[in-house]
Image 1 (cartoon, rainbow, N blue to C red):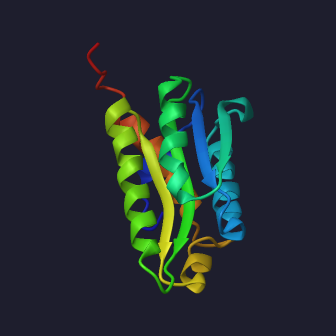
Image 2 (image 1 turned 180 degrees about the vertical axis):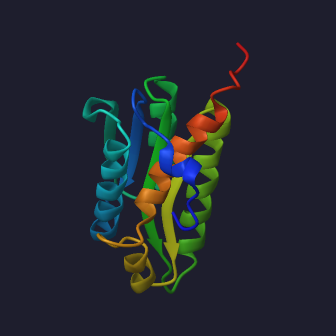
Length: 160
């Protein structure tokens, strides 16, 4: 995470449960995002049994899977990972926009941190630049965002 402060560097995922929903479309990119997110959670102390990964066909399916996972009440936070690359048709706008809206709806409906790790790029080169194995990888950012949001919200329990 660029500009990461000391607070974020110290955050622990120990004892926390994470659900990750990842799109198979553009799997070369999303696979690297997934590997980086899982590695980050484990490096921060999350137990392997506390990180559950669900694959869906594409970014459009991410919100429904996230909604079901949130409704299960088995997770402290969710991480959504995908990659939508602009093409020559308006398809990009519909998929990217509805994916983002749906993921935000899940977070607000369930009062659960849902990290948005969906790349929306103009071309493959931009997607590859944001999913490097040893470098900039938005999967890392999404995992850190989930952990940080959990810590930030800890003092604020939802009313029943």
